[in-house]
Amino acid sequence: MGYFTEVGIGAPANIEDAKRWYWRAAAQNYPKARERLEDLRKGGARMQKSRVSRSAVKKGSDGECAVM
Image 1 (cartoon, rainbow, N blue to C red):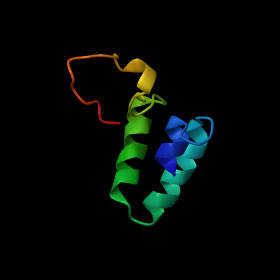
Image 2: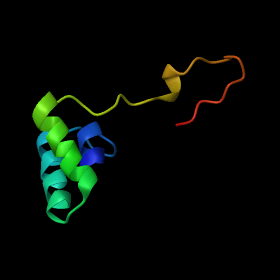
Image 3: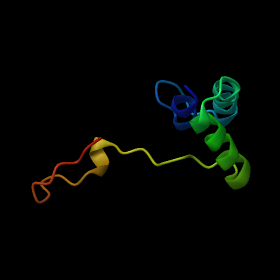
Image 4: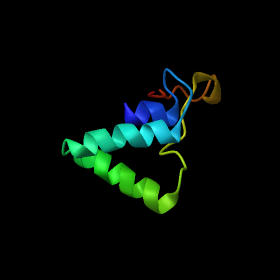
């Protein structure tokens, strides 16, 4: 839920709500949530990864498959 809220999947991106979700997961001993909270503390509120969209992928490229 934290990642979805951070990136904006299914709802507008909201970093403060994402932090709340990460805190809840970290309280239940999920190591990835703790790592993400630490990353956010060090790097500020920048998002984890940029989202890939179908429109951003070149059409008619060399026949390579784009995995999303």
